[in-house]
Length: 111
Length: 177
Image 1 (tube, chains in turn orange, green):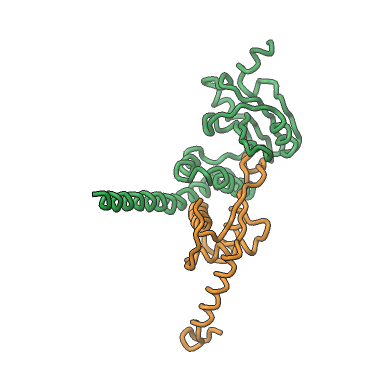
Image 2 (image 1 turned 180 degrees about the horizontal axis):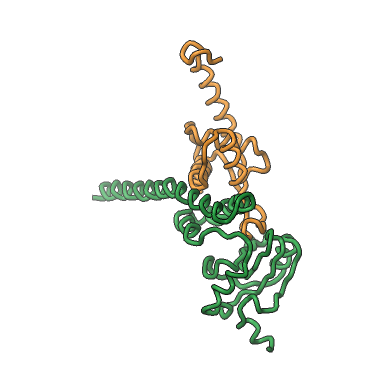
């Protein structure tokens, strides 16, 4: 898959990157989806998650590898994900930009 | 019955070649055994994929799960194993939760080849959790909802790819002419 650097990520892409970071070594489809649903309180489908993950992989922000097959998955393997260093840097930049833009007077009482 | 005719029996009547207590033991056995491969979905309910970590080769084997899907019976796969008219009988005895066939097939159609096995594995794992918590009917509804919600982003991705290719083709044609 072609890897290219992108300095723009969407809201859902940002959430997926943060979910992968939070899951650490256990980050794969099911755990990422559950983390997103717990954090955002909205339903996340496997299709939307995998289209986002493949897009992040094309942007060179995450890397993936195939793990062991397990019986509860009908003998299918898991694809594990890991956030690359460039993505962590990008996330910090996005957070910093957000902090700079968020002023208490524009969003009432928001620190 | 001699050994040569054994594969002609429905799988529930065939002598199993492997009875392993855990999925890990079963996996090790299947990897150590030379199973022939065959396409997914040809006889869905009895198939398991086994990926050999050393060669990354995926093998398929007949498998029937019981109860919590940790006890399995495996049968070597050969083309002559598929017997017309036995599928109903075979599916009846399988007690492990299985998602609706056509809903899963839709996912199979629209997912990319490189993500297909893992993505369907994820949704089947979650389906098993819903099945344990509620029942098959509710798990099926959850599965249909997942598939319905997944189709839009998957189709949109496919359309975007086709549109991008068509656009590129038009530019190349204009450059050539």
